Length: 539
Image (cartoon, rainbow, N blue to C red; front, side, top):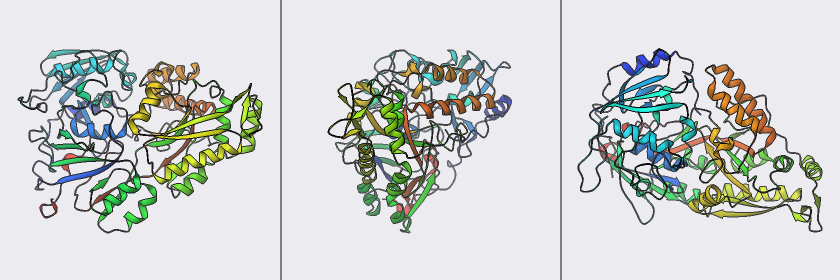
């Protein structure tokens, strides 16, 4: 959810921008050298690498290197053409006609010639994305589209159900090839394409090693000009401390998200650049409302009162962040500053549990009708960072003081995702969301988003929330939408489907031999085409 500074610009400004002739990418003739390898550290590994089924940041970053949208966002956060060279928008704002580039080819599979990008691929992507059997969080973002049609091989037309704010920016969704997936109708996580994708982007997937390293190589035929760096290697780490040490010992060149505890060490080393960026993210404890005990709002609210969030932020993250009260990141225009975080008040927590019918048993654990209030807390990735381990231990201790039992369980990333999003086998999770610029929380809290691999993992359902979310999508008045979001924020802060924790200040760290590094606020690698390594520093 980056700032929407251009949200209220009239639609014709966008038309004007996209009607301009496509300029050659500035790095084609910038005099900077090609060559070198960039090894970067990731906290975990991607579950899938296509842009449709993926729902984690590791995958999103890789998809930025592999794929393109019809339009994109430049370093000034302005909409620019990508696969479309221009667009025409009807006077009533209901028809968007995209004229596609004719010089784009798909990454070739081994033994095959590169195939051209055409309108068929755009229509195929849209149909697959919206198919009922495709499990993706993207679907709700494009329900405003009435139809997509091919006019000719290089022209597509989208008709909208209604005019919407900032519609053009939404056409930045990544396009996949018609000949990519095995299934020509919908996409599943079992399709080989999601693990061996081909795109139109600046980098191509070469292979995934036995150590789960993802190796990408430069696309020599990239339509915006060959990227400078020859190879990107994503190296997975199960421990943030080890990842920071790998940077210090030159085993990797970049960390996309630095452990806050390691910031002073990296900052003090002249070999590295420590760059802050606003990812508009937040951390939370999320609850499974399928558990009848957690379905009671008073229990969820009691847990929130019981947790000393400021103490954890100060102790485990060196205070590098802000305590939050609701479902939007504080940097977002949608955040309601009038809603204050619940204070640390363990006595109030006990009172709420008593009100909900719980009393302490002989072992000190709250119980109701013979059932103890003992919960499982599942956290992704075995051998977690020290900070996360401390958060889990503190959470267990805080809840122990009010008579709630907590059994912490660290799970390998993919196993954790399966437990949470597929099997729904958990009571509480500790996790983070990273948002785009839409401030759209539909997939997180609308009742239609409950189900396998859906983002409403906790099965939260509230008719007023559903109604407000729908209303927010129908309005063309930005201030009215802001008012609706403020109301959503207020209700969700009271309902506590999550215990909203904090948004951390994000830092990337990279070796100074990497030059012209510009970081997208939440997609990270969007501008990596222009990064380069001086010849004397290439390995």
